[in-house]
Length: 278
Length: 278
Image 1 (spheres, each protein chain N blue to C red):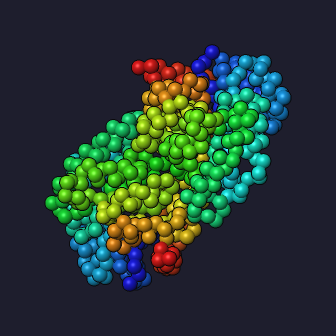
Image 2 (spheres, rainbow over the protein chains, first blue to last red):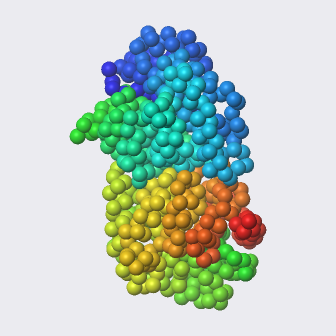
Image 3 (tube, each protein chain N blue to C red):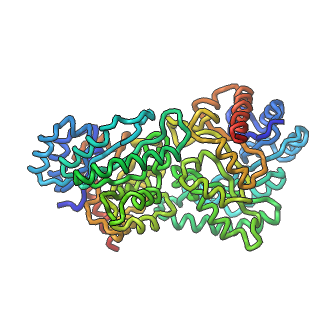
């Protein structure tokens, strides 16, 4: 089996969830990251049946804009809980939590951060009871206004310190996405500080000539991120799960034959894994 | 006189340097930020004559990609020194230093940062001798690959600590551009840490629906940055210069009558200044 997973966002326009599970399994991929819209189109029971048939693990379930949507409106009260329920039913390793940005018309990012902290604190008992680890995802600062006001590993670590409880761990940890954090001068120090709490590790590449703020990610090896070094650091920090390839690429990989995309992911991941061993 | 300056990038496609000096002066703007390409098209002697005639201060001279150009090639040895010479001849309050990103084909951002530090250390004696303060500009993390590998106020403060010399100050400080740093959870702490070393304060706004990584800045008041709070914080941190409006806007303000752009800058700056007093 290939020692990594693929997030289905990598083949979002090409494949349904059923097709992605079958297509990844055909390439010996043993894990998948799943998105709510795709899950709901497939149906939970059918998804569970397909995952079991192919022996495929769910490395993450994507919780986007948990508390505030992209237009700055508050999400419904049960929005995040439904995602927890679905993640539990899938047996997902974690719910990746992207908290949302600023309220519409607001310039108060400190206030947005306080509300996100309170929202996570409110969700945590429910997630703990459901057995779903909450993985806070720091999102690139260029999306702070409309996707997430949590923009650094330091901020995610601070939240884990504050919410994780005295026992440590406490059902809350971090989703490290290389795309969002590669630039951070505190990267090494904050990955070390995250030891024992990294619940997901997502990889792609940052293209030197990035053209857009969304959906312009690169295939591993085509950009500037030292992914081998980051994989090694995440392993040292105790992450034992499957790294998850997640490439949203409107101009390139979303236009290709998805079987080819998966094949290239396998090749490129092998290069990173070899580099991380050195 | 209006208590702020305008960086000529705000009217880049519309006005030459001569036109910008005259156009800003007509609106009672008392300072200008100048770019090398515009200066060289005008000629240094003519620029000096026009600045004197209009009694206009030069709040910054823009030093872009000082050590590595946008394609990752090393700049010529005399590239940065020529900018220092020009800044000195203009009597600019500082040379705003954007250090450049990664070398072509490199994934070593730590190495790029070390080279930038060495480059600044090498330039500093020359700049001190010329009487030109070096203002390190932290640039938004979304431009780390190709514009600057110095991406946080913390990194700029660290460089000032390392290079500023035991006497403090030492001819090196920071250019704070609201657009680049507004998202930073450490903003307040790092502005306080920068007390006495803020050499330039540039303002515009971050549009909630930013469409591009370059040249998509907003007019003050049209976006999500709490500019009044930031102006107040920068004042508390000892900045006594003229705040400088710098709006690169390919889709909007660059398409308008430049006199109208200047008029709106005056209106919007007054709102910010009033808010900062509260």
